[in-house]
Image (cartoon, rainbow, N blue to C red):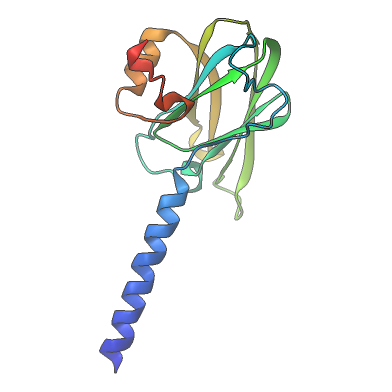
Length: 172
């Protein structure tokens, strides 16, 4: 009887782990965002958002990072993934939101970082969502503009998602 209970528990545990881990790395784009251009005939900037793998496990900080454009959620970006979004020409503030653990806190703390960027029609931009580890004060993600060669190097082992599947950085 005990062996039967153990087997059922093992199967339930394995299925739970598979389901949870399959959800953790998914990237999604809010296509209803007011600054997302869905009409390919209209002017837009090609903006790649890139989040590399972490160099070691960071617990809750490994969860998907929320990225806002002018204070409205644009993307939820999983680690080891990158995506392409067509954005209307605009001066914008990019905000990253993630949770981390502080040494002296029992509950996770939300971390935010901002960067101002100008997106021009017909241009391509690469935004690296760089992990910064402040040891006792947790982990946060800093949005940084990078060049094409750096983007190619960083994304060599990453998974293209969404619009980037048909326009991989390595092919630019």
